[in-house]
Length: 287
Image 1 (tube, rainbow, N blue to C red):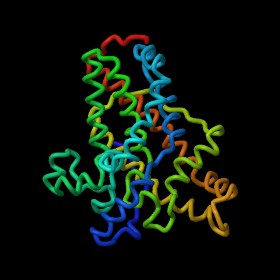
Image 2: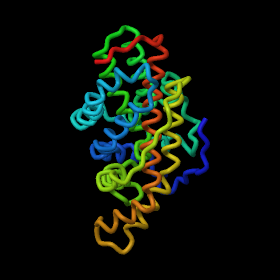
Image 3: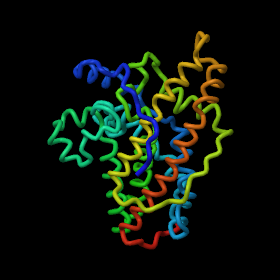
């Protein structure tokens, strides 16, 4: 289990439940988290974390995976019902580390009701679902389904590493920092990616894909306060979000950004490898 050294304070998140639910849905259309460049970087680096037996298939499909990892972004933009699949508002469930929320979907629904669970996001369960889809595709040796499931799984694993996909304050609306998620997950990446040193670890087997997804989301959530503080400090004395603002923001939050992107690549490779192992380690084609 990951260690958490930062406990999120809950300032500004104690509005009435109905108001919070309204705010959440108002924020969703602009709450896409990582930009396309970030997701593509995560996928590109994840391929290199895999063992030799998996390399031919994933190297041959690297371009496909990079192109299709962002497919759910378009679906989320067009279909509101798709949006809860890409986030989980952990802070709806009490104080950190949110132990009131069961980690099995059936138990969570039994406790809170399907409507509330779905409204506040189902991201960890979505990762568990696509992990199984990829496992099933590998087991059936359905390589077209496998590469598509791998790309879609990549989107959701990347989302779990985005701190703003773990909170009711998804777009900074509750802390009066509207657009902070885009400034962090897209603005900093687009401006400074040539300076990034992403070095993910080798892929490792994941015992429980859904439970591990919850751990990822918790870890991501624990960085929120430091990112929000960096955004406020970077904007002090400035009338807009200028180049000076981004230089300041990157100086304060860049290390967290690169850490999350690197960890996302490690975890994504681990999910791909886990699905392959659980499928019986089938021989993968090189095209």
